[in-house]
Amino acid sequence: MKTVQRIVSLSLLAGVAMAGLTSHAKADELVALKAQLEALQAQVDQLQSRPASAPLPEGASWITFRRGTEATADWNMGLVGDAMPTTSGMTIAITPSADLPAPIHEVTISGYVKGDVIYDFDQDLGDFFSYTAIDGQEDQDHVRLHARQSRFSIKSKSDTAIGQIRTLIEGDFLSGGSFGGTDFRLRHAWGEWDMTPNWTFGAGQTTRNFASPFTGITTVDNNGPLGLIGSTRAPQVRLTWHEGPQLFAVAIENPSDGQLINSFGQSSSNIPNFTARWQYETEAGHQFLISGLAANYHLDGDLDGPYGSDSKFGWGVQAAANVVFTDFLTLTTSVMYGDGIGQYLFGATGAYVDAFGDIKTIEALGVFAGLIFDVTDTTQFNVGWGWSDMDRNDVLDTGLNDENVEMMSLHANILWRPVDQLRLGWEVMWGQRERTAGIDPAIPGSGGTVTDDAWRAQFGAWFYF
Image 1 (tube, rainbow, N blue to C red):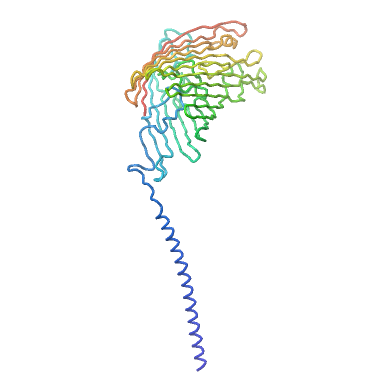
Image 2 (tube, rainbow, N blue to C red; image 1 turned 60 degrees about the horizontal axis):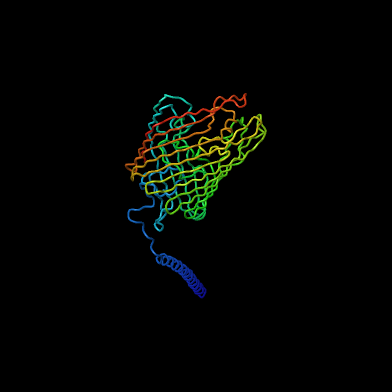
C-alpha cells in the first residue's frame, strides 16, 4: 500500500513540475510577442508622424504628353534658319513621384515637311544652289521639284544628380549632295553634360565650333550664301564655359585630310583640327564673335605612292557681328581669313601637293553681309551677299582645271508665316564662279581662269508637325 501511495505521489509531483515548465515557456513567448508588437507600433507611430506627400495637381500624371517643344527651345545647335517653332512638335515629360512634381526627363519630337519648286534660268544646279556646278551653260533652263530637305528631330533634357544631360538626333534626306538621292542623312547626333553651372562637356556630331551660330539670313535654298562656313557639321568633342552674356568654347574636330588634293591616296589623318570660339551678347541684343582654327595636313610616306612623308599647318580666324538697328532691322556680317582654311570656308580648298611632293596651303578670304527686315510679326524680308576668294596663284599652281578661284552670291527672299505650323518663302538668287581652265600639267604656266554666272528662282513651303 505504501508503495502505491509513493508511486501516486511521485506522479503528482512530476505533473506539477511539467505544468510549471509549460507555464514558464508560455510566459516567455508572451513577453517576446509583446516586444514585437511594441516595435511594430513604434514604426507605425513614426510613419504617421511624417507629413503627408503633396499630391500631383489635378489632371497631372507621372508621364504627360503636350503640344510644343518649349522644354528644349533654349538649346539650339544649328545655324540661322534651323530653329523650329516651339509651338509645334510634341513633348513627353516624365515626373518620378508626387513629392517631386517637376519633370526630370523631357523628350521633344519635331520637324517639318518641305516642298521646293525650283526654276533655273541658265542651267540645272541641283536640289540646292550648287556653286561648283556653274560651268558656263546658257539657255539651259530647268524646272525641279523635290522634298529632300524635309527634317526630323528628337531632343531630350534630363536633370540628374550630377547635372543636366541633353541629347539631339536630327536628320534629313539630302544625302549625296545637290544631285544625290533620298537616303536619310544624319545632321546632328550630339550629347551635352552640364558638369558645373558654368562648364559643359559635349561629344558627337554637330555644327562646327568655328562657325558663327547667329551670322547669316534664313534662305529658301538649303545651301545659302557664300562667305560663311562651308562644311557646317563635323564629329567633335567640345568643352564650353558660359556665364551671363559670355561664352567660350574649345573643340577637337575630325581632321581635314579630305581637303588635300593631288595626294595620290597618301593623305593621312594623324592630328585632329583644333577650334576655339568666343561670343558676347549685349543687353540691347547686339552679338559679337571671334573664332579660330588650326588644321594639320599630312602625307604618309609608308603608303605606296610617289611622295614621302610631309606635314603642313593650316590656320583660320573669323570675326562676326549682329547689330540691331531697330526692332525690325538687323545687320548680320562676318569676315573669315586663313591659310589652309579649306572646308571651313564655303567653296575653298585647303591644300595641295606640288610636283616635288611638298604640301602647299591655299590662302582664302570670305566675307558676308546681310540685312534682316521684320516687316510684321508674320512677314520677313532678307537680303544677303557673300564672297569667297582663294589666292589665284595658289589655285593655278595646283595644276588642275575646274578649281574654284573666286565666287560670289546674292540672295533675296520674302518669308511669310501665317500660322506657326506653316511657312512660305519666295526667293531669287544669283551666283558667280571663277574657275581654272585650259591648264596642261605638262606645260608650266599654261591655262588661266574663266568666269560664269547663273540665276535661280525658288518657292518653298515648310509644314511643321
